[in-house]
Image 1 (cartoon, rainbow, N blue to C red):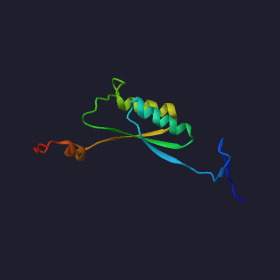
Image 2: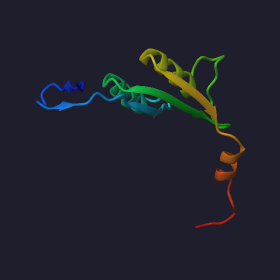
Image 3: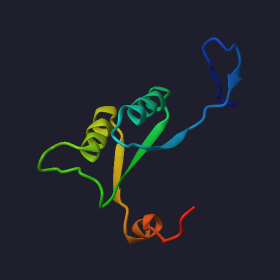
Image 4: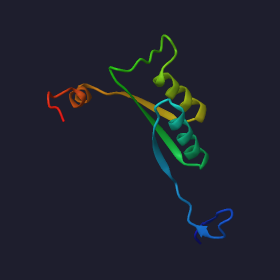
Length: 100
């Protein structure tokens, strides 16, 4: 016998699904809201936050986008991985001397 879920308002049955998502969590309100909507739908979310040499985040000052991303993830009860963009990123944004 197969198990299925009746979705409210749809009148249709569907097999249960385990859904997962990755959220690019910047620490700004738009990514916070988008992530919260996904979490509230029962989807397992893992957040990813990138910092760079241009980032002004500081754990000492307790402010900045990275700190806010970690706070947001904690409030939503999800894991956040903070990654630093490295030299490959700097090479990608370095001026090449070519003008459009």
